[in-house]
Image 1: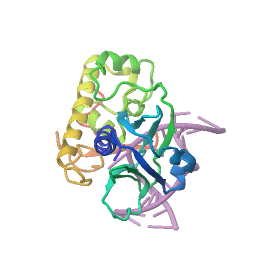
Image 2: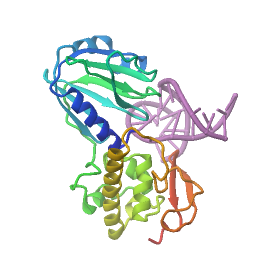
Image 3: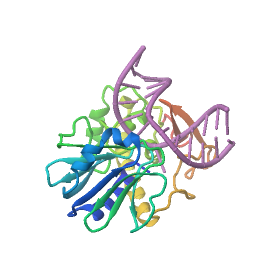
Image 4: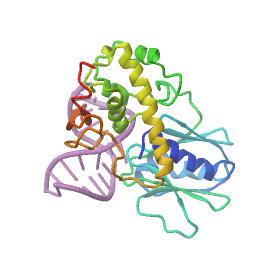
Length: 262
DNA sequence: CGCGACCTGCAT
DNA sequence: ATGCAGGTCGCG
Protein backbone atom coordinates (compact mmCIF):
# COMPACT_ATOMS: atom_id res chain seq x y z
CA UNK A 1 0.00 0.00 0.00
CA UNK A 2 2.86 2.26 0.13
CA UNK A 3 3.03 5.53 -1.73
CA UNK A 4 2.69 8.86 0.04
CA UNK A 5 -1.09 8.70 0.60
CA UNK A 6 -0.97 5.15 1.93
CA UNK A 7 2.03 5.81 4.14
CA UNK A 8 0.40 8.97 5.44
CA UNK A 9 -2.67 7.05 6.46
CA UNK A 10 -0.60 4.31 8.08
CA UNK A 11 1.53 6.87 9.91
CA UNK A 12 -1.64 8.43 11.27
CA UNK A 13 -2.75 5.09 12.65
CA UNK A 14 0.65 4.53 14.22
CA UNK A 15 0.71 8.05 15.64
CA UNK A 16 -2.65 7.69 17.34
CA UNK A 17 -1.56 4.38 18.79
CA UNK A 18 1.92 5.11 20.08
CA UNK A 19 2.62 8.81 20.67
CA UNK A 20 2.99 9.56 24.37
CA UNK A 21 3.19 5.86 25.23
CA UNK A 22 6.09 3.83 26.51
CA UNK A 23 7.34 0.75 24.69
CA UNK A 24 7.11 -2.45 26.70
CA UNK A 25 8.40 -4.88 24.11
CA UNK A 26 9.45 -5.15 20.50
CA UNK A 27 9.30 -8.54 18.82
CA UNK A 28 10.83 -8.99 15.40
CA UNK A 29 9.41 -12.12 13.85
CA UNK A 30 11.09 -12.30 10.45
CA UNK A 31 14.84 -12.60 9.81
CA UNK A 32 14.74 -9.99 7.06
CA UNK A 33 13.58 -7.35 9.56
CA UNK A 34 15.98 -8.62 12.19
CA UNK A 35 18.84 -7.53 9.96
CA UNK A 36 17.82 -3.91 10.48
CA UNK A 37 16.70 -4.33 14.07
CA UNK A 38 18.71 -7.05 15.82
CA UNK A 39 17.50 -8.53 19.10
CA UNK A 40 19.76 -6.31 21.14
CA UNK A 41 18.48 -3.12 19.48
CA UNK A 42 14.89 -4.29 19.82
CA UNK A 43 15.47 -4.91 23.53
CA UNK A 44 16.98 -1.46 23.98
CA UNK A 45 13.65 0.07 22.98
CA UNK A 46 11.94 -1.19 26.10
CA UNK A 47 11.15 1.72 28.40
CA UNK A 48 11.62 4.33 25.69
CA UNK A 49 8.75 6.68 25.01
CA UNK A 50 7.49 7.68 21.57
CA UNK A 51 7.30 11.44 21.25
CA UNK A 52 6.23 11.76 17.63
CA UNK A 53 5.64 9.85 14.44
CA UNK A 54 6.71 11.74 11.34
CA UNK A 55 6.50 10.84 7.69
CA UNK A 56 8.89 12.08 5.04
CA UNK A 57 8.18 10.78 1.57
CA UNK A 58 7.49 7.09 2.03
CA UNK A 59 9.63 6.81 5.18
CA UNK A 60 8.38 6.98 8.75
CA UNK A 61 10.30 7.91 11.87
CA UNK A 62 9.25 7.33 15.44
CA UNK A 63 11.04 9.98 17.51
CA UNK A 64 11.92 8.61 20.92
CA UNK A 65 12.48 10.23 24.30
CA UNK A 66 16.01 8.81 24.35
CA UNK A 67 16.83 10.99 21.35
CA UNK A 68 16.96 8.04 18.99
CA UNK A 69 14.52 7.30 16.22
CA UNK A 70 12.96 4.12 14.92
CA UNK A 71 12.89 4.28 11.13
CA UNK A 72 10.44 2.25 9.09
CA UNK A 73 10.08 1.95 5.33
CA UNK A 74 7.25 -0.20 4.00
CA UNK A 75 8.80 -0.77 0.55
CA UNK A 76 6.30 -2.82 -1.46
CA UNK A 77 3.71 -4.31 0.84
CA UNK A 78 4.18 -3.05 4.37
CA UNK A 79 1.40 -1.60 6.52
CA UNK A 80 0.53 -1.07 10.15
CA UNK A 81 -2.21 -3.05 11.81
CA UNK A 82 -3.40 -2.92 15.40
CA UNK A 83 -3.74 -6.26 17.13
CA UNK A 84 -6.70 -6.79 19.40
CA UNK A 85 -6.02 -8.03 22.90
CA UNK A 86 -5.39 -11.74 22.76
CA UNK A 87 -5.47 -11.73 18.97
CA UNK A 88 -3.10 -14.18 17.31
CA UNK A 89 -1.00 -12.14 14.85
CA UNK A 90 -1.79 -12.89 11.20
CA UNK A 91 0.87 -14.79 9.28
CA UNK A 92 2.17 -11.71 7.52
CA UNK A 93 2.95 -9.82 10.73
CA UNK A 94 6.73 -9.29 10.82
CA UNK A 95 7.19 -7.22 13.97
CA UNK A 96 5.11 -6.20 16.97
CA UNK A 97 5.60 -3.09 19.07
CA UNK A 98 3.78 -3.30 22.40
CA UNK A 99 2.93 -0.21 24.45
CA UNK A 100 2.28 0.35 28.12
CA UNK A 101 -1.48 0.65 27.64
CA UNK A 102 -1.71 -2.77 26.02
CA UNK A 103 -1.76 -1.48 22.44
CA UNK A 104 0.10 -3.67 19.97
CA UNK A 105 1.16 -2.06 16.72
CA UNK A 106 2.14 -4.68 14.16
CA UNK A 107 4.09 -4.42 10.93
CA UNK A 108 2.04 -6.39 8.43
CA UNK A 109 4.08 -7.19 5.34
CA UNK A 110 3.43 -10.31 3.24
CA UNK A 111 6.63 -9.90 1.25
CA UNK A 112 8.73 -8.95 4.25
CA UNK A 113 10.61 -6.33 2.28
CA UNK A 114 10.00 -3.59 4.83
CA UNK A 115 13.04 -2.12 6.47
CA UNK A 116 13.25 -1.16 10.15
CA UNK A 117 16.23 0.45 11.80
CA UNK A 118 17.15 2.31 14.97
CA UNK A 119 19.59 5.16 15.28
CA UNK A 120 20.22 8.79 16.01
CA UNK A 121 18.43 11.31 13.79
CA UNK A 122 20.23 12.16 10.59
CA UNK A 123 19.45 15.08 8.32
CA UNK A 124 17.57 13.80 5.30
CA UNK A 125 19.71 14.35 2.31
CA UNK A 126 18.98 13.69 -1.30
CA UNK A 127 15.25 13.80 -0.87
CA UNK A 128 13.12 16.25 -2.78
CA UNK A 129 10.08 18.25 -1.72
CA UNK A 130 6.99 16.32 -0.72
CA UNK A 131 4.51 15.70 -3.49
CA UNK A 132 1.98 17.54 -1.31
CA UNK A 133 4.24 20.46 -0.43
CA UNK A 134 3.36 23.92 -1.79
CA UNK A 135 7.13 24.34 -2.13
CA UNK A 136 6.88 21.99 -5.09
CA UNK A 137 6.37 24.67 -7.72
CA UNK A 138 6.68 24.42 -11.49
CA UNK A 139 9.92 26.42 -11.26
CA UNK A 140 11.36 24.12 -8.65
CA UNK A 141 10.34 21.03 -10.55
CA UNK A 142 11.83 22.47 -13.69
CA UNK A 143 15.12 23.05 -11.90
CA UNK A 144 15.13 19.51 -10.56
CA UNK A 145 14.51 18.11 -14.03
CA UNK A 146 17.05 20.28 -15.82
CA UNK A 147 19.61 18.19 -17.61
CA UNK A 148 17.80 14.95 -16.87
CA UNK A 149 17.27 13.01 -20.04
CA UNK A 150 15.38 10.17 -18.41
CA UNK A 151 11.69 9.80 -19.17
CA UNK A 152 9.43 11.99 -17.05
CA UNK A 153 7.75 8.86 -15.64
CA UNK A 154 11.07 7.65 -14.28
CA UNK A 155 11.90 11.11 -13.00
CA UNK A 156 8.71 11.12 -10.94
CA UNK A 157 9.81 7.89 -9.28
CA UNK A 158 13.09 9.49 -8.20
CA UNK A 159 12.59 10.49 -4.57
CA UNK A 160 15.33 13.10 -4.91
CA UNK A 161 13.15 14.97 -7.40
CA UNK A 162 9.79 14.63 -5.66
CA UNK A 163 9.22 12.62 -2.49
CA UNK A 164 6.33 10.24 -2.12
CA UNK A 165 5.32 9.31 -5.67
CA UNK A 166 5.45 5.64 -6.64
CA UNK A 167 4.63 3.58 -9.68
CA UNK A 168 0.87 3.92 -9.46
CA UNK A 169 0.57 7.65 -8.88
CA UNK A 170 3.30 8.47 -11.39
CA UNK A 171 1.07 7.03 -14.13
CA UNK A 172 -2.02 8.62 -12.62
CA UNK A 173 -0.50 12.11 -12.35
CA UNK A 174 0.84 12.04 -15.91
CA UNK A 175 -2.57 10.98 -17.20
CA UNK A 176 -4.18 13.82 -15.29
CA UNK A 177 -1.62 16.27 -16.67
CA UNK A 178 -1.99 14.85 -20.20
CA UNK A 179 1.73 14.31 -20.52
CA UNK A 180 3.37 11.46 -22.42
CA UNK A 181 5.26 9.37 -19.83
CA UNK A 182 8.04 8.77 -22.35
CA UNK A 183 8.84 12.46 -22.74
CA UNK A 184 12.40 13.27 -21.68
CA UNK A 185 12.22 15.02 -18.31
CA UNK A 186 14.22 18.04 -19.43
CA UNK A 187 11.91 18.67 -22.36
CA UNK A 188 8.78 19.64 -20.46
CA UNK A 189 7.54 23.11 -21.36
CA UNK A 190 6.23 25.60 -18.85
CA UNK A 191 2.55 24.74 -19.40
CA UNK A 192 3.31 21.04 -18.95
CA UNK A 193 5.23 21.73 -15.76
CA UNK A 194 2.31 23.72 -14.42
CA UNK A 195 -0.14 20.99 -15.30
CA UNK A 196 2.10 18.34 -13.82
CA UNK A 197 2.50 20.11 -10.49
CA UNK A 198 -1.23 20.58 -10.11
CA UNK A 199 -1.86 17.02 -11.31
CA UNK A 200 0.54 15.67 -8.68
CA UNK A 201 -1.24 17.64 -5.96
CA UNK A 202 -4.67 16.59 -7.15
CA UNK A 203 -3.63 12.97 -7.43
CA UNK A 204 -2.30 12.93 -3.88
CA UNK A 205 -5.29 14.79 -2.49
CA UNK A 206 -7.80 12.51 -4.16
CA UNK A 207 -5.93 9.39 -3.08
CA UNK A 208 -5.83 10.58 0.51
CA UNK A 209 -9.51 11.46 0.50
CA UNK A 210 -10.39 8.08 -0.95
CA UNK A 211 -8.40 6.29 1.70
CA UNK A 212 -10.32 8.15 4.34
CA UNK A 213 -13.53 6.94 2.76
CA UNK A 214 -12.59 3.42 1.83
CA UNK A 215 -10.59 2.79 4.94
CA UNK A 216 -9.19 -0.71 5.02
CA UNK A 217 -10.27 -1.54 1.50
CA UNK A 218 -7.76 -2.34 -1.16
CA UNK A 219 -9.10 -3.62 -4.43
CA UNK A 220 -12.04 -1.89 -6.02
CA UNK A 221 -13.54 -0.70 -9.24
CA UNK A 222 -12.69 2.69 -10.50
CA UNK A 223 -9.81 3.16 -8.14
CA UNK A 224 -7.42 4.38 -10.83
CA UNK A 225 -7.70 6.25 -14.08
CA UNK A 226 -5.08 4.23 -15.94
CA UNK A 227 -3.01 2.10 -13.57
CA UNK A 228 -3.58 -1.61 -14.14
CA UNK A 229 -6.22 -0.84 -16.77
CA UNK A 230 -4.43 -2.03 -19.91
CA UNK A 231 -6.85 -2.47 -22.79
CA UNK A 232 -9.71 -0.73 -20.98
CA UNK A 233 -11.16 2.57 -22.07
CA UNK A 234 -9.59 5.85 -21.07
CA UNK A 235 -11.98 7.56 -18.68
CA UNK A 236 -11.46 10.85 -20.50
CA UNK A 237 -11.49 9.99 -24.21
CA UNK A 238 -12.47 6.33 -24.46
CA UNK A 239 -9.32 5.20 -26.27
CA UNK A 240 -7.58 2.06 -25.07
CA UNK A 241 -5.25 2.37 -22.11
CA UNK A 242 -1.78 1.14 -23.00
CA UNK A 243 0.87 -0.53 -20.93
CA UNK A 244 4.55 -0.08 -21.61
CA UNK A 245 7.62 -0.97 -19.58
CA UNK A 246 10.01 1.76 -18.50
CA UNK A 247 13.08 0.90 -16.45
CA UNK A 248 11.56 -2.49 -15.82
CA UNK A 249 8.31 -1.16 -14.43
CA UNK A 250 4.84 -0.91 -15.90
CA UNK A 251 3.60 2.44 -17.09
CA UNK A 252 -0.03 2.92 -18.09
CA UNK A 253 -1.21 5.79 -20.23
CA UNK A 254 -3.59 6.90 -22.93
CA UNK A 255 -1.84 7.57 -26.20
CA UNK A 256 -4.65 9.78 -27.41
CA UNK A 257 -4.83 12.14 -24.44
CA UNK A 258 -1.16 11.94 -23.57
CA UNK A 259 0.34 12.41 -27.00
CA UNK A 260 3.73 14.05 -27.31
CA UNK A 261 2.01 17.03 -28.91
CA UNK A 262 0.37 18.11 -25.65
C1' DC B 1 21.55 3.61 -17.61
C1' DG B 2 19.26 -1.43 -17.13
C1' DC B 3 19.16 -5.37 -14.12
C1' DG B 4 19.21 -8.57 -10.28
C1' DA B 5 18.50 -8.90 -5.44
C1' DC B 6 15.65 -8.66 -1.57
C1' DC B 7 10.77 -11.67 -0.13
C1' DT B 8 6.17 -13.88 -0.53
C1' DG B 9 1.75 -14.65 -2.55
C1' DC B 10 -1.19 -14.52 -6.27
C1' DA B 11 -2.90 -15.07 -11.04
C1' DT B 12 -2.16 -17.50 -15.23
C1' DA C 1 5.56 -24.10 -13.34
C1' DT C 2 6.12 -19.28 -14.57
C1' DG C 3 5.68 -14.44 -14.20
C1' DC C 4 4.33 -10.58 -11.87
C1' DA C 5 3.67 -7.11 -7.99
C1' DG C 6 2.57 -0.34 -5.06
C1' DG C 7 10.33 0.16 -3.64
C1' DT C 8 15.06 0.76 -3.26
C1' DC C 9 19.87 -0.43 -3.53
C1' DG C 10 24.09 -1.91 -5.55
C1' DC C 11 26.26 -3.93 -9.47
C1' DG C 12 28.29 -3.92 -14.11
